[in-house]
Length: 164
Image 1 (spheres, one colour):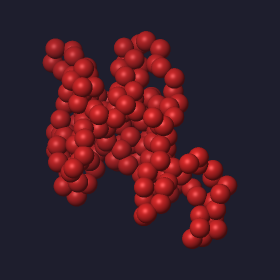
Image 2 (cartoon, one colour; image 1 turned 120 degrees about the vertical axis):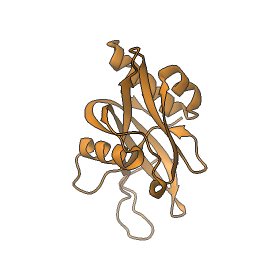
Image 3 (cartoon, one colour; image 1 turned 180 degrees about the horizontal axis):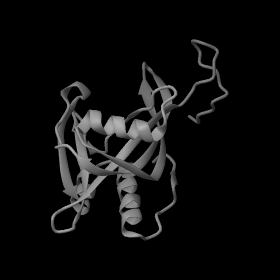
Image 4 (cartoon, helix red, strand yellow; image 1 turned 180 degrees about the vertical axis):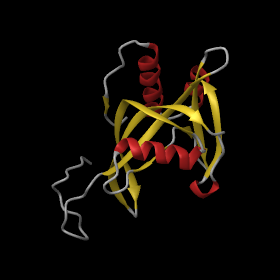
């Protein structure tokens, strides 16, 4: 099924609006200078990056900082856009198109704490290689690889990613 924003929703006769979300590749350098990435694990889910819906009228960068803080208790500086991913989800019994824009977020304060109200059961720092081995979804691994390239000064892979 191909998404077409001009096709009306059967319930409203209004065009389907894609779900817009923002996520963070939260990073820090260990005492030894090693790059580490913060991953979350949701109840019944896999290790992934923090993300969430953008509120109406909210700037993407503000949404990234808010979602990361809500899901992990970490605050920091939102930096460069890493990559955008597009995919389809099931929501309320129907297929919806979702767009997630990921940004680098340099961790500055807070200790990783899972937030039960967000259904987060684990939050943990991983060296990049270990993070890539734990992330199951290819699109999320590609976001982390693009972030690593940006942070190492090498040109990142293509910025737009289509569904797997």
